[in-house]
Image (cartoon, rainbow, N blue to C red; front, side, top):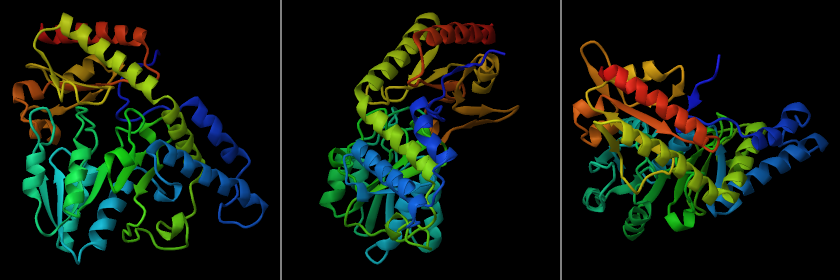
Length: 379
């Protein structure tokens, strides 16, 4: 059976061959514990610290400001819980947005049990946050703002630099979930001016189960995991050397090819959209037309249902749905709801996301498949 064309890179990415090659010695022969003082621990320890430097290179920060985690969700948990609890004597108010990933929204909801309040600011119909809504949400007891860098469903970029400047003026800690943006656009923490930034390895051609959190030097979030003194004493547990090495290599690759990758992703995304738009009526683009990820294409097909579209193309093209339609109900994603997409459009929303391995030939084949599927469903 021929594998479907993969256009779901925002969900996860394949392992890059260079990443696999970098990890192989630590699967096959270099099994030592990085905390061991003898010979077997030397190479694993050096590999972990090299990976930390590689991540820091991509983010333009100091290596000691990078902590390894099990992924984006854990990084978000560390950042939000750690800073909220560390600052609780100063205030217990958090600001986030209505379009955040559940790995942020669920954490904020959980913190209500500890007496924290959360204000979720709205977005406009492109999925972008307006600065005046953030400013209006700030209270004297606001201690943390957590806003994603780029939306995972529609790709809209948020004005993180402007939000961070406002946070600085008000002496508020600022965190951004950059799981979708790292490796696709610049994520220089000095330019963004953020205090904390989350990374997920499996979004940048590294393995699942590994991530990182940037924590600006001088910040002291509450410890998340107690035990021995790994990760500078902040996150205990024997390091996952194999996957840390993979994340480091992936970040090194992303840094050296960021501009080229961005151009390729944009070209593949726009080729898909423009040719579909030329062939199909009643199709609309979701998200900001310009300020969005170079690889993300969320489109709605009026009057159709996303799950039926995916059923039609699923054996030939892999993509994601923005709505789940059942016999008598339609469940929209919280992002589409927050953007106030009309139901007749929203229920037919499909997200396509391109990657480094996507080819023009794959895009053209996918266009034919999608076009024929939409026409069959409308017939």
